Amino acid sequence: MTPSGTIDRVITDTIEKHEQELRTISLKIHNNPELGNKEEKASELLCNYLEVNGFKVTRGVVGLSTAFIAEFSNGKEGRKVGFCSEYDALPGVGHACGHNLIAIAGVACALAFKNLLEQNLIKGSVYLFGTPAEETTSGKIQFVKKGKIDEMINFSMMLHPGPWDSVFTSFLALDSAKVEFFGRQSHAGMAPWEGVNALDALMQSFDNIGLLRQQTLPSNRIHGIITDGGKSANVIPGYASGEFYIRSLTRQQLNELKIKFEHCFEAAAKATGCTHKVTWAPWGQIDDVFQNDVLGESFKSYMSDKGVSYLDRTDEQLIVGGSTDFGNISYVVPGLHPSFSIGTTAANHTVEFAKAAATEEAHKNVLRAAICLAKTASDVFIDDVMFEKMVTNFKKGKLQ
Image 1 (cartoon, helix red, strand yellow):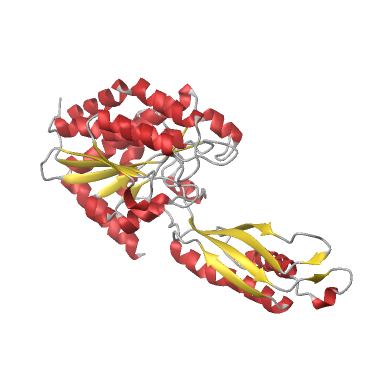
Image 2 (cartoon, rainbow, N blue to C red):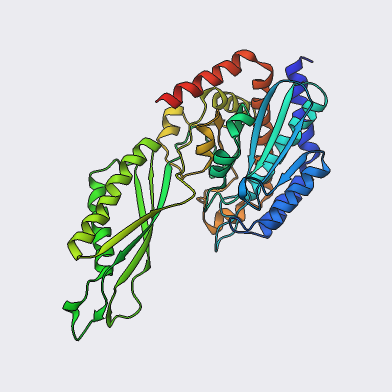
């Protein structure tokens, strides 16, 4: 058997050996959903399992109590890969984005790489980043800001469940903001003219945003809710607030959209006589995912060998997905974030998808994808030409 054949065999055997243990972990996380930055049980479960299996685990990293880094090295100078696990749930619908599957996908890849390193089939190190709060405060941003990702690893990879298999679907850059308007209360029946209506300003902002949509790219997204519209219909609201998400295909387009977005609120404040305040998310902006071409095509090839079919790349890129903080990692090191089908037509973030994330089919599919992801990563370790092409593609993309 060739060296690459031996590596492929070790990866497959390792992940299949741990299949039932990984299934148990996945279901425990799925059946005990925890919101972002509160994933104490999931984080403890994963850390304990990794320690039992020989990893050095550091808990509470990058200022987040449920974040961790698990690492293993064979002490030989070589390449370094970082896989990511997520394990936070959504309010009301639990693991409707399948983060229980993302959790074990990262663990499966890490286990396979540890075995390769122990057998000296490759040289270097493997890291598993336990990244909390993907759905809320975007824990990976803190890994980028405080964890020195670009100094620790050469490239990073993770998997995400969805209704279909894809590699080059577009993930949007995202930022979120709290908007507040400050007016003056008055009696709504006795002297409404004495008031300055903060709710009117917020409602006018929604109208402004609606008009902006006609003059912005169809790939842009703006959506928001009213969080405070007053306390009584008999009182002119002196305060009103809302929360908004805005998204674009690239972080550059997002920066341009944010300026126009802020103008919508400035105009509404002037029109109603209010003052206003826009507070952007303190944890920072989520970048779009820069999928590495070399990693993506390799992964796609391995999945195709297992009978998985894909749309043409051009058609895939026309599909606009959600947003993920893995985008921030993909702009500091070469990265890959493919999606795999779990056998449902239900969209992510629905009750139906949450149910599907616990099925045997979903478990089978995540391990199949993990095997292909680990094989792609191992090729980067043993193929110098592939490594250089990966780096070149990354540098080219960062300049665009």
